[in-house]
Amino acid sequence: MPLTEDHIQRYARHILLPGVGGVGQEKLLAARVLIVGAGGLGSALTLYLAAAGVGTLLVADDDVVEPSNLQRQVLHNQSRLGQNKAESAAQTVAALTPDVTVRPIPHRLDATTAPDLIDSVDVVADGCDNFTTRLLVGDLCHRQGKTLVSAAVRQFDGQLATFKPDGPCYRCLVPEEPPPGGNASCTDAGILGSVAGTLGTLQATEVIKELLGLGESMAGRLLIYDGLNTQTRTITLPKDPHCPTCGTPAA
Ligand SMILES: [Zn+2]
Image (cartoon, rainbow, N blue to C red; front, top):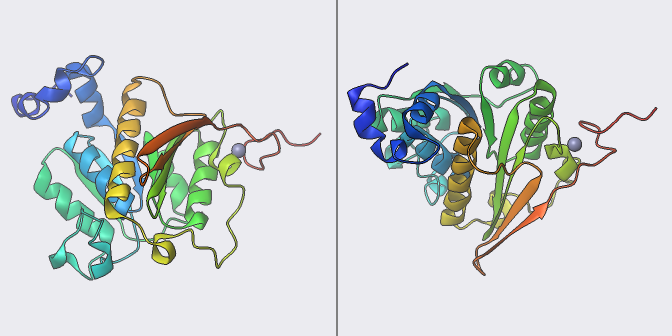
């Protein structure tokens, strides 16, 4: 779809960018992204993808907005308490831009519902709060040939990686669900709200890079953010030859 005058005004600062231009903006407007989780990561991610004009966002979250979410989940606000987060995301984006359609998915993704949703998008971005969903989405993205941009946060730290169908996959990084009783989640360990925003914003940049084929993909690498010391490092993420999802089956 050619850009309208309104598009040219709204996305003028994108259109100036080398590698984006009008053609890149048209691609963004035609793009579809599945966002898993409308929490701390999903807030920054959804806001920046919507502001960038990524035309269709499928936002999946089965939770409702609670007072303790508002310290970091900037998609939501006081008047949305008790409302489903995916529905709240749709309302926030509708107020931001007429160019983006949010399709709210107000339930938790499972093996029945997730494959069709993943099939229908260009890129999947996971910022959810549980390893069951993360592993399910990681396995399905690998099997269905979709690029997955994944981020996680805890306390003052974060991680970011992109997984492509030729591996390594998410399960190479997290082979199985950590045993219960750990303090991996924000609920148990706490999270500085702005750290979730930092990682969600980095995730939005990686999604846009993947959609437009810009720069160097994070595939095969893991970025580690240490907020207290203001340091980042990037390590190579090896493919696990014995990974049950992407490894070679034993002969
Ligand atoms: Zn793997």
